[in-house]
Length: 395
Image 1 (cartoon, rainbow, N blue to C red):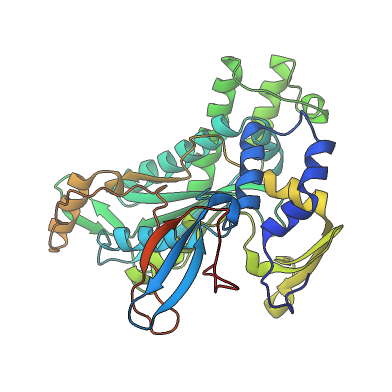
Image 2 (image 1 turned 120 degrees about the vertical axis):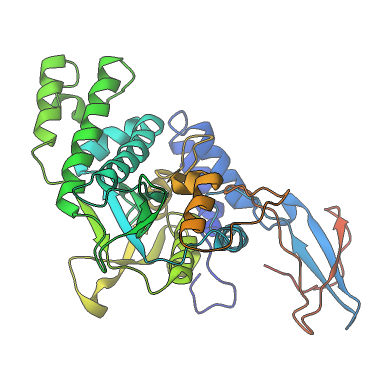
């Protein structure tokens, strides 16, 4: 298959072509969550999940819409969720500058996190949020209570394990008198100070998890960090605190709406988007990625992997069951505090509604006719069943 064909390429095509062989070769080594993701992606928007019959009363057009798997790791099921999330969060925007801060785990710590995903991803959220709140609350810097929305990503452009959190932070906060205190124009918080505190808080958390015997470690990494001997592991933890940890702060966004559009692309992103796939056959997958060692237009490169290696990399990023990858802290975690901030900025408080927003919700959106753009009526269709000959499908 290639992008030149009429049918767009899909991650599901890789699983359908080589998924059974991959499962057989790695029997006993794939988790239940990974197997569920493979099954969901293979069946997404196919007759196996059923379908709905759509009818446009305006132009008398009929179509078949196959049901989605609604798995949060599926590349095809995130667009509607991102749009709904954007619409809900847009009401909470403040008329201030917003900043984008990224906290990244170094390579050796990320290796340990791979074996302890739930614990160390949770610690990543905790250490990053505490770092922002503590430094911003210090009178030597901002001296105010801020808020932040954080999104966990566990991949790099080549789908290798690269855990980091993207943080979107309003440029200011509430001081002790509940008045709005803005950051200096074009400057949020000192990156070096953030990096030092983040590094210390995270490694303190790792040491506590080790002392309580909650961490696991396997393979050559066990010897590399001296995991089996407390004194060696403590020395390794101290060594990590002398390494440089990457905390990156980007310039402020061009207006609050630009922030949310940017973030909505991150909130429901998966390890690789279908549009990056260039070709798929029974043995290899070719896709585009960014080589950050290059600059400008030369960053975009093509990579070819075997189907097995492609699936292995994709499944590295299946999150633990029930783990929330979008979280809110400080002012943005409390509607009451957010309304105090809006009042301090002389903005109308957010109106109370009976409807609640769930960041993981994946309800469907209304169908619109492709011919006349009118709403279409929807009726359930049981499959297998007789379908009209060559009906148009909505994917």
